[in-house]
Image 1 (tube, rainbow, N blue to C red):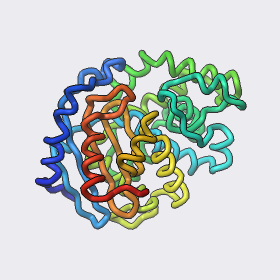
Image 2: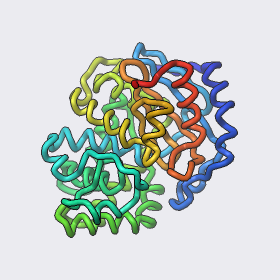
Image 3: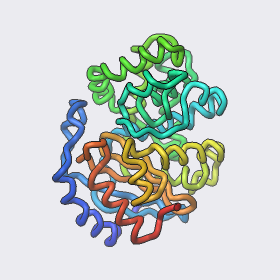
Image 4: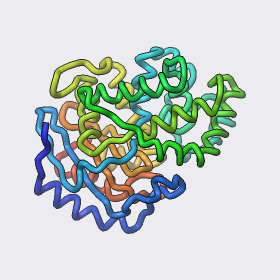
Length: 309
């Protein structure tokens, strides 16, 4: 499928772009710090098999925390509901995505949900594979299945940059290992996790993934069931309750669609039965969400009455 430029979307992008000036790129990961602050693009994949874009929608970026949704879908497919949620909880948190505090105060000491870093690390640990290579290969193939088998790449420079700055994630892993949430070598887990986060897409790809979720796991072009309907439902629920870090409550009120952001500036949206949305805008607010991207979604939701509430 090809995407068509859309004048209305282009106007939204230009209206939202000035908001990027008040944010900053995620320079605590050196490879992400080189992003152009005022980049902004969006693609909307209509489940009726039309696609619209504005901006440089083919520019690639790494998924970062957006990959947590896909890793959760794979872990649920591998291990099942009961196993996954015996190791990670289902509750939102008002703490930052990289916080360790709730691990120390919760009983049992398991992460509150799969969308914070501790929970995402625990979920990645559950993905089947004999070694790092097999696990990474399985994740990449799984992500590719959402794109009808189109090639998916990992940005190894970004993955290495994240490995070198992953001390807080190491601390989360060692705490969880001490309490029996994860087992094995922490460095091995971090290698798989950073590779997962460094998977690359463009806005069109991301919108297509969102469209599969919007259709309860069904590929909008082929009609193939990519993931079980219940797995898609669980993923979308976490996107609503936890997908925008500790801004998820405000996001639900202002915009009200299942969505997941990443610190590269990506946002994936899944409007049930209607659209998949992919956005890239690397200038972030203090909570790690794309400032201009959030503004685009807010205007879209208002104009097209997208809120599920």
